[in-house]
Image (cartoon, rainbow, N blue to C red; front, side, top):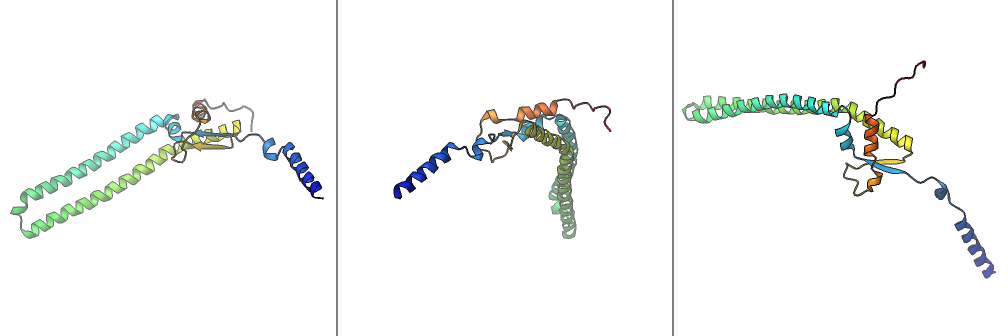
Length: 183
């Protein structure tokens, strides 16, 4: 009986090895990656966005610089005249400087928030197009997963799996003409 049981298990094992599993018969899992930073930098419209942001940031920086210069002038003036001022006048000037510095900090925070919001406003349409191109490529070519190599999570990858240039080609391709007669 023991020989029969061993023989039955051996026969079952051979049978299992000869029958392909569901995972073996399924198509191989296609995986690729992109460099999102490169895509955003080279996407159509990104150069114009950069120019617009740089102009706006330069304007805001000029405002900040002017306020900072004004504070520095107030401080230098206070330091040079402080020995001649009465205690009340000294206190008033110190309060004026502190108030101006507080206003300056508030304005800098407002500008930083506005710059961040503006950058998001300008980049969102480009990022949406990049995402659409990635999704279209993934669907058209049957990729199960596409990773982003610009994140720190990816340690190493085969350059043959880099889909960045394919996505860029989709982004830069002219949009298909609308079909006539569809309602």
